[in-house]
Image (tube, rainbow, N blue to C red; front, side, top):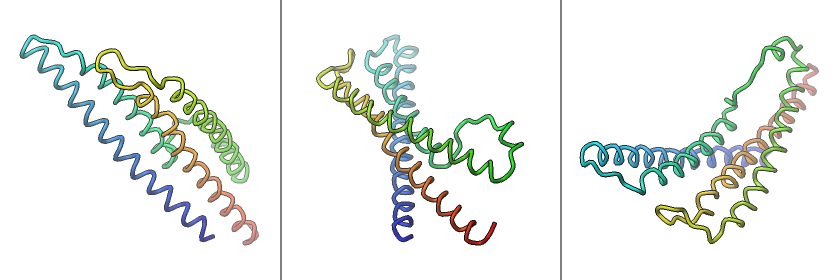
Length: 168
């Protein structure tokens, strides 16, 4: 049980770090887009770097936000039929969904690493950012989702064992 406590703390720490990373990239996106608006409408001059860097920063924002959504279990769901299930079936359903998500995250993580390796040496068009840094957000987010889902599944198993021991 001590290991599970440490894993929960690690998951919380990962979530905090990823939240800050997302906020930093979101702040940068707002700055870049605002700079482009001012340059275009005040100075009648378009900047080449703002659109590209804001787009790449926004990709990071989306994936960092997705990791937080996995952590706090706020993924988009359609739960009309789930609401009709008995309590034990709801628990089984939730567990199966988490296992399927875990499978998808493992695919995301492994394919994301391949994507980073494939794009090594490629540069973006306008500002010459290494594209593997842009695409590094895929395995980076996959790692956090893997941590959160693993901890969630372990907590679910622990809760099921406690309920079974109590005779529920």
